[in-house]
Image (tube, rainbow, N blue to C red; front, side):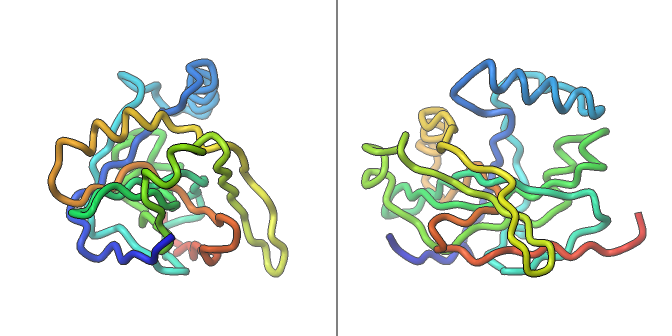
Length: 190
């Protein structure tokens, strides 16, 4: 494990509608469609977002109260290789109803500071666990937990063609206590 600063990342791509199990992906699409979110044109679907919204801050500011994130892996391509970490593609759920691409651009993308070399974790990828928590006052509530379920090959091939640092797939997480909780502070005025 190593500490990494994402300050020099130039390209950020968020993978949406991604998963190993097609039935789970379709279930997620159906859930969001019931909330008014249009289904994707293809799966997975990749969203380019500004590197300016990438952060390793413990606290973020969001507009309105309809935002959220989930635990997901982060892939970071550097000159020294591919690394795996955790983060959040914190998303504005209000904007998502009329533009998923916009909803991804509106909120900061939180990334942890701890990364592992891809080749050091790929052998036990299916044993990796991510956990996502919501904090209400002093209470910490588990919101999501499970296996690392992204289709690694898709992300690796997307990254392999680029010689620059590239980040793919993220959401707010704590992995074995290595990342501090992130707090989203909403501003009024939607």
